[in-house]
Amino acid sequence: MNFIIAFLGACLGLIVAVIVIIVVIYLKVTKSVGKNGMREIIKTVKNANNYELEEYTRLKEVSGITKLIEPVIITDFTDFNKELLYSKVENNLIKIFNSIEDKTIANIQNDNDLIYIIPSLKEKIYDLKNNKVNIKYDEVKFHSHAIKNYLKEKGKATITISSSLEYYFSDDSKDKKFEGIKKQTRYTIEFAYVYDETKVENSENVLAISCPNCGAPLGKLGGGNCTYCGTYVEPINLKGWYMISYKEDY
Ligand SMILES: [Zn+2]
Image (cartoon, rainbow, N blue to C red):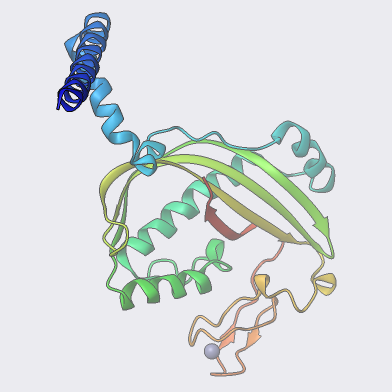
């Protein structure tokens, strides 16, 4: 009997000691950071388990080695202007975001700048419509751009660009619901310049364009008659940098 009382007494003592220690720590921290500081700390701890949301507020660094790569590109393409390419990144991404928001490519269907992007964008919009998902990108602001990579082989040159930006993002799909959350993010964008069409490998469907009338792949870069619906497609001016892919990558 005495043993049980002694044991319970010891337990109680331990609990009291732990409470006292917690109170002392709380008071000490409150004293040093102030009441508002304490509230901030509690808020931060509560939010910390939502790592994804925390990550959205962190400004993303572009990853690139512009100074090293730019002179190499200029050796191959003397009129190369990186600022021009950066403004293409901004214009194209905004056009892409708008068409995802509106779930239609009506405004960009005949936009040569996006000729290689439209087929995959069509698929994405088709999926969004099917799943009744609404995505919004508001107040898009670009921070910086850098050249990440450059490759020139088999009749085609490719430049990879890293761009940091922010926007207010909404996505009402089931697994991830976001309502106008401010998101800091980064995109990797690829541009291609076909300088010798005869050397570009046929298997490379990344540069295939599709018929603006029926959507069938044309296969040829130089235009011609669509094998499915017969529509004549104007050959596009290939001597230029065209966006071939974009990807959020942070
Ligand atoms: Zn066609």
